[in-house]
Image 1 (cartoon, rainbow, N blue to C red):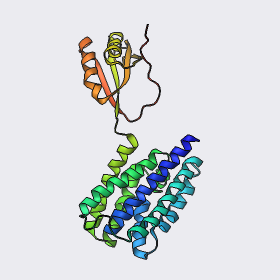
Image 2 (tube, rainbow, N blue to C red; image 1 turned 90 degrees about the horizontal axis):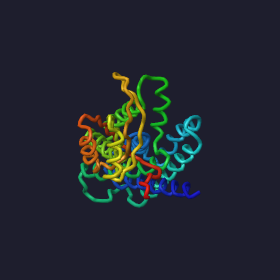
Image 3 (tube, one colour; image 1 turned 45 degrees about the vertical axis):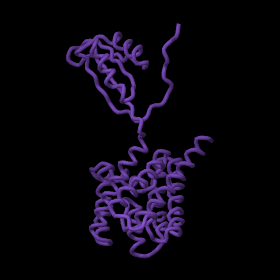
Image 4 (cartoon, one colour; image 1 turned 30 degrees about the vertical axis):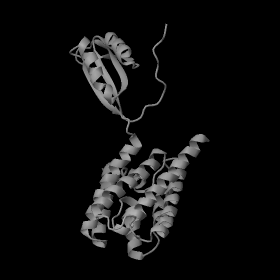
Length: 283
């Protein structure tokens, strides 16, 4: 129950942050977001109807489509987030009345700061198990019919949306919309993956026991030994595996190279680590 409460609390906050960025920065500046929200903003501009109506109406078929494949919990969470987003857009529209929150703000600054806020809101929703846009759901199903990845399909859809925006608004605003999309995308990555990026390290060496012991003693980091076999030589080896912070990478390299200058070290990014670290035994 605590997990559900936490998830829906952050879904609410994320959706409201997204709605705030749309009405406080982008609607007054005629800059649009990508995906269903971008389509809704264009249709709202053309018809003068409430933006929230289009957000719910256009997303609804994709939510129903997701019910078949992506699970009830994801679909319900997504519907909840989109509903809060639509209500938030309507609420903030009544507060700002089509005016930018910072009067006379340059379009470039609108794109940057608005994109940061937008990305933070969307990232918060995605991190807590939901989505605010049916475009991704459509792309998942489209990959079964056409030879493109989900990312490529989303890119094509957004390219089409920004092109249409060039005709509805003008090309300058369409280009600023692309800048906004890029800034928001990068901000979403930070929110979803976190700032405390860790590194997973594989050390392939003939001195695995010695290096592993040094890492545990000198860095206070747990290691795992993985049995392996050389592809060319067929020789049995033990790989030293551990997860460390990015600030510890250089220290680990020094420890490994001290014992085995020929050690093969592979380092990868790790965006989320869960579980209990095994402590050193105290005798």
